[in-house]
Image (cartoon, rainbow, N blue to C red; front, side, top):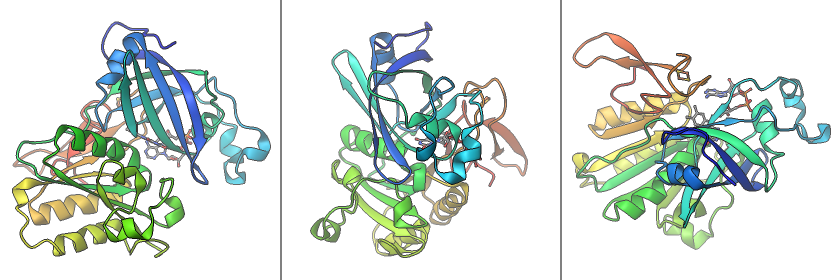
Length: 315
Ligand SMILES: Cc1cc2nc3c(=O)[nH]c(=O)nc-3n(C[C@H](O)[C@H](O)[C@H](O)COP(=O)(O)OP(=O)(O)OC[C@H]3O[C@@H](n4cnc5c(N)ncnc54)[C@H](O)[C@@H]3O)c2cc1C
Ligand code: FES
């Protein structure tokens, strides 16, 4: 059973693991279920918000299942909670289910692989601001770099449900096709129709793939794929378009540059190491521009973000 351990909407909650499936060499999908007050709090979880998960008491996998390059990291103790966004949230009567897509990169995510159905995990959330949709938008472009996928998958679902008048297209890029955190690509007919990824096609959202090494889709950075798409649009009203992006900082900087060049609104989800996630430790500073000035100020990724207007961030 999930239970709430604090009295505010944002709090420390227990989630029950429903499933934990490997979906790629290093990628897993973790299904969580919340009940009671936790179900109510997480039913309002917006795309781009995040949780801080406690994995300090979770066991490591057996030695033969630890990749050699993570053998040293695996021994590190987990003192701090780790931030994760959700790829999907579903409300079912008095339960809220969330899907977390994660990549195994170090000691905490290694431990996550051993979570089994019925296990309880402590999470703090919902945290951060999440993406928002200004009035008057009719085209949304979702730009994903590698593990930036989860919040934009969630956004694709919410946008198509809450704003059916907005035409949504996703662009997903990685160094190589194996580093794209998706389960399966669609058949050639779907691809010809503009639907490359099942995770977006299920919301009738078109998607394109880009790989740096030409192992799938467009050959080159996802931002070049986005530029090619702009070149193919002759009558796009700039005010009606919004770009949402999540991925490595270099990609976000290029997306922000493109948005500026084209005069298009753009929101980017920034990533920082987060010790507390609630604005106390100051470890997650993001340099931001002060309007009409050359000065910069620091904002907190966990509280002021993680989603920022791209014009605001000083890359
Ligand atoms: C708001 C937010 C949402 C996130 N959502 C997801 C998600 O949905 N799925 C997912 O797989 N991961 C997500 N992450 C990243 C995730 O938190 C880290 O991969 C995780 O903390 C790694 O823990 P670890 O102990 O396994 O590895 P660590 O040893 O802590 O890290 C392994 C490597 O990754 C780098 N790294 C770890 N965390 C960050 C970070 N926050 N910023 C930059 N570099 C980092 C480290 O420098 C190190 O090189 C998110 C991060 C943030 C800030
Ligand atoms: S993570 Fe502690 S202030 Fe942001």
